[in-house]
Image (cartoon, rainbow, N blue to C red; front, side, top):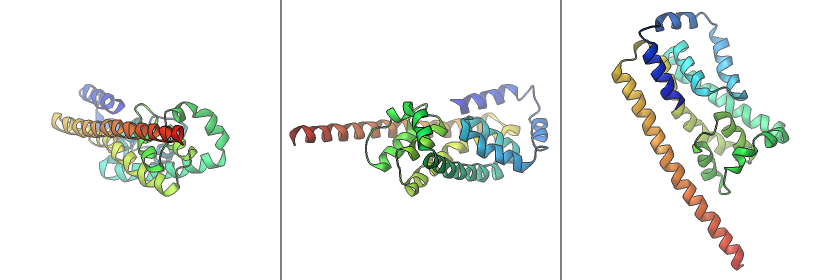
Length: 207
């Protein structure tokens, strides 16, 4: 939803604001500072879609995508380390999302958590580390899923200087495809994990 809002705002402002001027001003900021903010701000709850769009605007699509993906790797590493360093703090502040995560195997539960509608990026990363998902599985699932979703915002920012109707429709179609696939997978996983819980409960009752 945030990505769609960004796209609509850019379209509405395109005639009133010179995107080239905005890009020129953004390029005056040191690249290292922009990357540092891109990496650190999501760890404290800043919306990643806005930052990813800004990265596309500042660095362009060709450089913005790998930098965003690198920032995601660093955020996953940092999130995992922070939770294991101060588990009590995160356990206290992530109670709401933990209640939405069902019991089950690490792989399906990790995918399920990544697909929870409305779950913030930082909360997903911290919660998965908190419930004890093995690091290799954590990185192997979270990284590609975050990378696929981040590319939408980066494309919007990177192409903001030339947002034709065709490009906007293509980006929105890509976003809609990811959203539809995510919702379908979420519903399938929720049903599967629910069936597993009921089966386990039945086994216990008859044991």
